[in-house]
Amino acid sequence: MVASRRKDSTKHVMWMVWGLTLLAVVLSVNLVFGRHGIGHVLDLRALLAELSDQTYERTVRNHRLALELYGLRTDEKVLSSFARTEFGLVRSDELVFIFDTEGEARSR
Image (cartoon, rainbow, N blue to C red):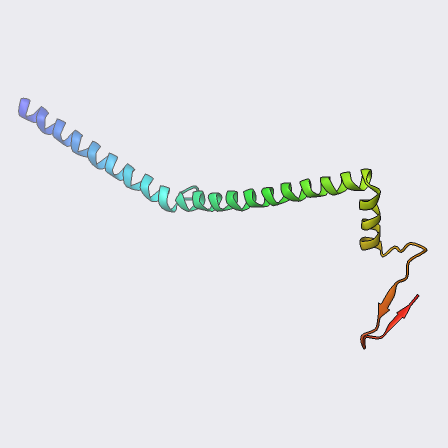
């Protein structure tokens, strides 16, 4: 009777070991190749790095634009320079020279 119980107990332990081994294999395969496995985590890390770079670039650009806007609102020289470079505006007492492709200058 005792030997029979030991055999049953040994079989029970063996089935548990095999079942846990199978479970470990299935979970390992899922971890490596599954939808939310290591590949997905690596893709998410790459995406996070890319988005972090974009966020930094846009933050720097926003800061630069805020400084430019402040200059346009508070400094006449900055406003004048902006109008000249962006819109091609000229003061009434200035001459503008336009060069043809051949290099001849004419004034207007």
